[in-house]
Length: 242
Image 1: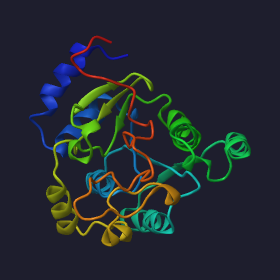
Image 2 (image 1 turned 180 degrees about the vertical axis):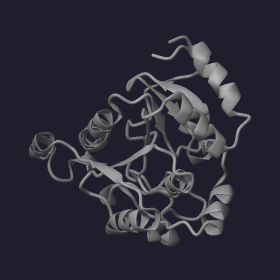
Image 3 (image 1 turned 90 degrees about the horizontal axis):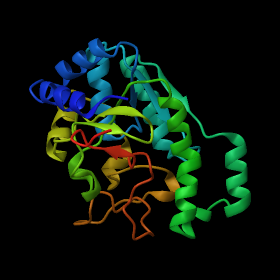
């Protein structure tokens, strides 16, 4: 466990650095203990490009829920070809998926928030815990602009549930910043973004958004919920004692 005072001090150092410099510092401080999770969203594609361009020794992984869009798998392939990176897949446990579907049905997540969160846990949260096990720093593509739930996140924060330091390098980037960088660097992106999809998850749980809708409105669109799957709920700020 990293003390709150250490996180605060490291945050103050990183805030003065570029993303590349900050990643380089973390690589030096935590050699072989940094991992980056990509879902192949636009934010994650920016970070993947940064890692590849600077040849940072950061492990890259993705969670394959088994219900992703074809376009996401296509982007996965194109990303590997373009950057020559190894992207390690983590899958849900077969027995857990079988039990989930036997109990709730193949599309049981539409029936209640509880059922949906059970599906997210089996397909995403449990595999994430396996992916993060033994690592010290988890890099994410979270941006504060994405949803009200993410506006109070910190650049560096302690993830209590996974016992890991979380680094959110794009936290203060705007959508315009991100799109401009993607265009400048010719970064491959999911073609669904051109069809009104902003936040892309599993195919049954994602739709395009309408003009004026919140960016997360297309996720779990049948729910009136906080639009989160549980991957980023176990947090404690740098200013809170651990």
